[in-house]
Image (tube, rainbow, N blue to C red; front, side):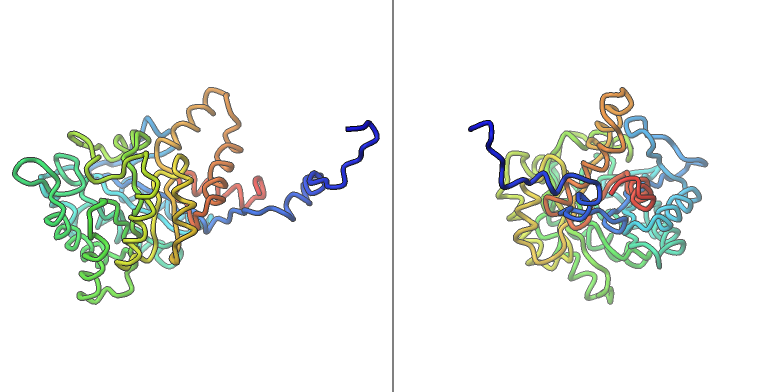
Length: 332
């Protein structure tokens, strides 16, 4: 190349000023693109800090009111509720008790902000079973898929009656979407939506979540959650769930599965969500606490990357805080 050569094509022109960069931005975040996961714990008088998730707590039935009102004021899309019960048993009886912690919390939150936020509930047994699995066990200790579906159907009706607008089916049982959809429709809950955690992988990134829900897991969940090496299987699971009537499908975790997320988004004719899980949150918080990264930029960039890969909505523990930055124009 001669010294006098002058490039004709200059992509940098569109990066020259903040105004130009904003004008040509391909992926934008809005507070309504975000959903906040919230933990509500039975039997505590004040919020309990989660050591592996700095800034996240297990709420009381009283403190959760403040959290959801703050979320509503920030304009986020919704909240996903998880219950942490005091007592657990083999079949997760607390999950279908109308006065169980998750169902109580759902009524509280729906009464408080049900007109401003989409109130969502985790429909899974792992928080309620003494063995920590997402379903009931058979005589030799394996998760019994079809017996678990019956429990999910019962959970769906109680959660819908408690005011949940969107049921998050996270257990990864075969046929769970069809089973729950039928139960809802035949019981008159035709407007209750179903979010299928379709491509949910057996990930190491769930570690801090286990503390958040006081998990009692024995063994692992590899017989029902997906192998991290499998890409096509994630898409297949999403297509099955859509065929069974899912209103929304989910990829979880988000950051390490952007290829799967992109595949699902390209093929899906229903909204596609992604869950930025506890381990993803904890890693950024830990690095920021040590001064190794710019926390605000890393949080924003991580969620933008998930949206760029195809997620219509992102579940993230930073939802309210990030929405505040967006509202204040701190990040674009």
